[in-house]
Amino acid sequence: MFHTYEETLNFLYENLPMFQRVGASALKPDLTNTLLLCEALGNPQLKFKSIHVGGTNGKGSTSHMLASILQCAGFKTGLYTSPHLKSFTERIRINGEEVSKDYVNDFVNRIFEAIHVVKPSFFEITVAMAFDYFASQKVDIAVVEVGLGGRLDSTNVITPELSLITNIGWDHMDLLGDSLEKIAGEKAGIIKNKIPVVISERQREVEHIFLEKASSTDSPLYFASDEFTASMQSENDFVTFDVFENGEPVLQNLAMPLQGVYQQKNIPGVLEAVKLLRAQGWEISQQHVRSGLENVISQTGLKGRWQVLNRRPMIVCDTGHNLDGMKEVLRQIRMQSYENLFFVFGMVKGKDVSSILRLLPKDAYYFFCEAKIPRAMDASTLFHEARQFQLNGEIVPDVNDAIHNARTRASDEDMIFVGGSTYIVAEINAL
Image (tube, rainbow, N blue to C red; front, side, top):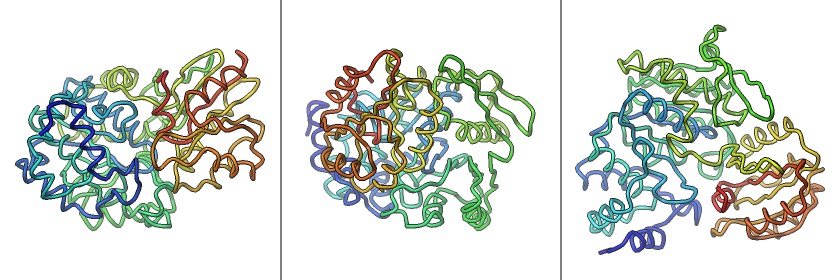
């Protein structure tokens, strides 16, 4: 048995397979283990209301925005997300407060025998822990972010008030399938019988997958981008959004701390979800929506989404790490004003490295680094791959050393971007 949080965490990291560290071998391709763990806990997943959020990009931001709005409306709101950036306890929150270290310790001690019998993965245990915590704390509602995929994801044992799928893009093709249709099919696995589902963005190439799945489960389906649109304007490098419903303004001059232009794609899904919740009887005013969106970072602790770490020189980090995520990041970089551009850049193995490197600007200077996890791509390997795409730079393996070197070279008028992998962002000391 474990006496301290540190002992408990070491056990979780060292004895249970963890996707972030080892990759696909950590995944259990069915829901059996999660259901067994939940059964040992008295099936907490049946004891609270929830919203289930999946998709390729944007599901983390969307989950935090929904949780913040529900908090503003006065509901005791659980939030489960992954992976964490700095602390394990970030994954499980109620009204923005992270789960206590004592609770983590007590929980693992309580189900220690079940762990030995079931032999679950790290993720399966964290999901069971979150559900147990939300049930015991009697949350009014919990926003639950899918880990990977949807159909076989450990979170897919809940029956939510509604499901929300942000978008479909190229990520984890080795696990989810080698076509957008196959990936969409896995994501669509969170659509439940007669439970409404919101699709944030209508994508012509995969919309039929959702329509067919929703038809088979008799689930009302809503494409949020058909009703809601968000435009943006930038002044002094600060972005504000105007949101429209069927062409009529509903939120103007929205000053969100989430400054990524890609939030234009997430906002419609959030507002469509709020509309459905209202129809179900949840009392959420337009002021709750505005306040929730404008205070999302302070209320939920979201980090790493186009986060400005410094102004002169401009230093920005972003957790976008797949092809579509990097396209959005690069679109935003092109909108900034700077003299010289520097990248502190690292990736993990298993990504489509060449497709991403092909996108990156050739006039930037790169500091190639690597996160301190087994899945990290070796910085020198990345450097040599990048040379094939005429990207110039140097190898500085440690993330913070690389940021320091970039700052040394940059003038006040320059820009430094830090990213390429969630785990690169996680290691930034200033975050």
